[in-house]
Image 1 (tube, rainbow, N blue to C red):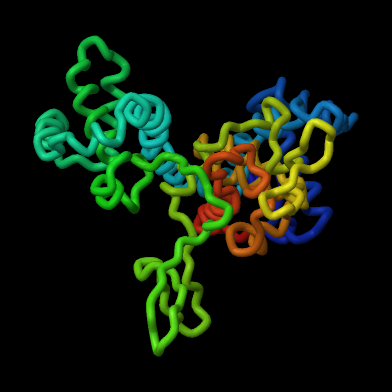
Image 2 (image 1 turned 60 degrees about the vertical axis):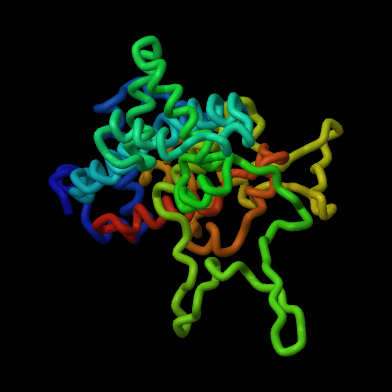
Amino acid sequence: MSALSLAFGLEFADLYERDGLVKVDAAFLAYLAASDGDLAARLGAARATPDDSDDKAVAQLMVDVAPHVEDFVAALFAIEAEVRALAAAHDELAPLYACKRLFVQRRAAKRVKPDEAAAFDVAVIEANLEALLGAAVDERNFATAVMAWLDDEESHGEALELAMHFAAWATLTVEGRDRFGKGILFKVPRKPDPAHLVVVETSHRRGHDMLHLPTDHLRRRDGFALTDAGMDLTAALDHANYCIFCHNQGKDSCRKGLRDRDGRFRPSPFAEPLTGCPLEERVSEFNVVKSQGHSIGALAIVTVDNPMAAATGHRICNDCMKACIYQKQDPVNIPQVETRTLKDVLALPWGFE
């Protein structure tokens, strides 16, 4: 274990005994008091007199404490460098989500109509963009450049106009969607069709019509090995940033359920009550912390209500997703963000512990 664990008299066995965990908790409280006395006092007061009636205050306290939990755990296991590297991977992707929200969705997809985008000479537009970027156009260098140009729009009006046309083409045309189909920058939320939630194709075999997934979605079995690896970090963070963090308004229906004005749970298109997460997991709060790059802190928030996150996530449940505040467009894929967060922590040294 690390110098910090030695300083607090902790041993590895303490992780597996209640008395040991009490010692770990005491070590954390001392660590927090040394780094942020005011926050330590808030946590102490909340523990001394729990008040679930002020849910927003509890939520904010958890969000504020989570990065300190991460720093403490990183120091406890002497994995500060690895945790910083994981956070840096989040930071490196940040321009993608800012550009998608502020430029692709709010500007390109709204100001340009699909038929206009289809008429653009995209070869010329892309060549001019490549000259500005000094490299081939990909999602990351496009997003990084656009966010820099937005900081000084007056000086980069022509460049932003060019970028808007390219973004509209990539987002609104079939050719653009085909080219960037596996990316996240040029994807906008769709309006779901409850009667066609799964895209299928029809083929005629042995005298019968058969429904099956599109060919590019088929995954061949390899014994009992998993065929679905889940979302990578880029895609999961796309959904974490897509969340509007509605716990701030007390509207986190993913956790509490989606209710009508009379207080009853709203039914889904299939007459199923949208009750939200059966564990009342603090989804919005962990999305905030994950989007900030604190994977251990985010998993800590998940674990408060769901210590068996390895058994949930995208492989088993989506009650939270069905009750997401986004009911008229694609919901946040909460189970995938949860699973990705768990995997990111497990991939760290001492990840299981």
